[in-house]
Amino acid sequence: MRLYSTNDSSNIVELKEAVLKSLASDKGLYMPLEMPKLPDHFLNNLAHFTFPEIAFQVSKHLFGTTLSNFDLWEICERAINFPAPVKHLEDKLSTLELFHGPSLAFKDFGARYMAQLMSYFTKDDDKQLTILVATSGDTGGAVAAGFYNTPGIEVIILYPSGRVSHLQEQQLTTLGGNIHACEVEGSFDDCQAMVKAAFIDQDLNKMYNLSSANSINIARLIPQSFYYFEAYKQLAHHDNVVFCVPSGNFGNLTAGLMAKKMGLPVQEFIAATNLNKVVPDYLSTGQYEPMQSVATISNAMDVGAPSNFVRLSKLFRGNLDEIRNNLKGYYFDDQQTRAEIKTLYDTYKYIADPHGAVGFLAAKAYLKTHVDSHVCVLETAHPSKFIDTVEAVLSNKVVIPERLASLQHKTKDAARIENTFSSFKNYLLER
Image (tube, rainbow, N blue to C red; front, side, top):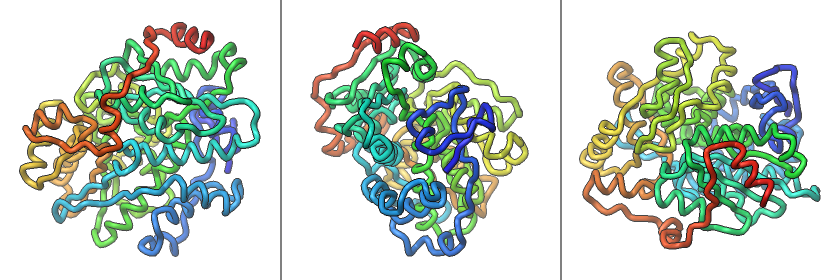
């Protein structure tokens, strides 16, 4: 498999380099040079494939002969070992639950697959691989769980102080071992900028063998495409299937669009955001204007400069009309989000987290003008990860799964750093 940089289409590398380096030397993101069309006999018979088998088939057609079938199957079987069930709420509305993995968030799929792939590519290396990851909430927990005690790999997680929930923070800061956390006095965008700056810093690259587990790494996006096929398998009896994706850094939605490019017969996608509405504004005005991120109760979507917008654009060669034909955008504020959490519970007895609630708001807005569609909302995190918000709205207790509840009273261990790259660089050099 060969991939090109979004900053220079002639900058082409093999899969191993793209996965281990994450960011191209010209600061671009890697994209597949070719997006293969999956064979009809696979797409028409999804019901006959298990979830790991779907992951294997999609990976095989993307990777070609880069990995043996044996090694690739082992990666898929180890990584994709929990379900992604679709729950039907009514005839036109369903939800794809992506929180049944170890960290209770959709990013478990990408993190676990990436950990297996990186472990495969580094098994014969002498030098330790250091993963840098910025998180607005769920990425860090998923990466921490996915890479915990992986031989030859350490993880350093940057997160914005005061902008993640308590249980999210516990997932980042209590594992120990090869997982290290940095609490940054800034926003997610600041954390992401520090990670990107580290990759091009000569001093750090002399000391460290750096990679990333953010969605800037193509190894995060590829496995996120798998569950769109798995969901469509469960929705095959519906016509005009639309996926509604709560969106922040837009890796999840870009992965869905990649699935469509590979042949998944989805009608279109919905980008659902909070007040960090850069992409809905772009779809409305045709102008892409990054903004300073705004803090909301759907914190994992508090991204004002989404990295994956460039990938989204490249999928359609920057053609705004094509993008609009495949993607609709909606945004909502915290008051609307809280109201929707209550409405979903009152109507369906379904408890949604704030991100899922934003998705349901967008789905309902879309269905007002697309009455023949069936919208499947991606529920990206378990509501217990946002227990204070959800319980305050519903006046009900939310059950915390044991794998999360066990972290509540563990001791936090995080380095506090200022909102400057020099502060982060000094932390890395002095470790």
